[in-house]
Amino acid sequence: MIQRLLAGLVAAIAFGVLLLALWLHRVHGWGAARALAAAACVPLLAHAAILAQQFAVGAWLRRRTRPDLHPGLAAALRAWAGEIVASLRTFGYAQIRYGAHALPTGQDAGRVPVLLVHGYFCNRGLWYAFAQRLAARGHALESVNLEPAFGPIDDYVPVIAAGIERLRARTGAVRIAVVAHSMGGLATRAFIAARGGDAIGAVVTLGTPHRGTWLARYGYGRNVAQMRLDSDWLRALAAREGSRAGVPFTVILSVHDNIVAPQTIQTLEGARTIELFARGHVELAYDRDAWAHAIEAIDSAGTR
Image (cartoon, rainbow, N blue to C red; front, side):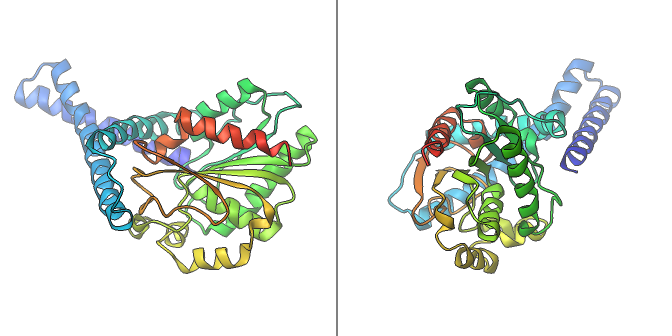
C-alpha cells in the first residue's frame, strides 16, 4: 500500500514540476533548463521547510525536558541536512524500488538471523542499505510490511509473528534478533506482550517513541493516535508487557530526532540506551554509528 501511495505522490509532484516549468518557459520566457531547475526547487524547498519546522518543535520540547543539554547549532544543521537526504532517499526511491521485494540476505549459519521491522508510513524498502550491510556479514534476514498502514499497532502482531517463523523455519534458529525503526519498536513490544519472547534473543529499536511523541497529534491513523505522548495505549502496553519477557533491549535514539519528541525520554526501564547527536529520525536507519551499535546487540543475541 505504501509503495503505491508513494509512487503516486512522486508522480504527482513530478507532474506539478513539469507544469510549473512549462508555465515559466511559455509565459515568462525562461530557458527550458532554467525553468525546470527552478520548478524542481519548489518541492525540495517545501520539504526542507517542513523538516525545519519539525526540528524547531523538537528543540523546543528538548529544552523543556533536558535544559542542561546544549548540542549547538552546527549539530542541528547537520541533522537537518542529513534528514533531508535520508527522507528523500526513503520516500522518493527506496520504498518504491524495494518495498515489494525480499531484501538481501546472508547464509552464514554462525550469524544471528535478523528480522527488520519498519515504522509508520514506511515499508521494508527503508532497510535496503542496512540489509546489504547485514547480508555482507552473513546474517540471514527477513523483513515485514506492516499492514494495514493506518490500523492499530496490535494488528501488526501476527505480521511480526509470521516474519519470525519464516526466519526460524528457513534457518533452524531457536532465537533471532529484531531491529525495529520508530513505530516498529512498539509493534515488536506488542508482539512480545502478546506472544512472549522465547523466539527473540535481542531487540534493537531506532528512534522508537516508547513514550509517544508530541507530533502524533497531527498524524493520520489509529496507530498515530496510539503514539501520542503517554497515550492510554502506551500505558496499557507498559502494564501488560511486564519485564518484556526477559528479552534484552537496546534503545538507540537521537537527541535531534525531528519526529519523536521529546527525544531524550524515549527509553525503557532496564534497556541499554545509546544517545546519538546530529541525526534525524529517518536518518537513523542509514547511520553507520547506529548500525554499529545495532550489530553489537545482534551479535550478543547469539550468546543467550
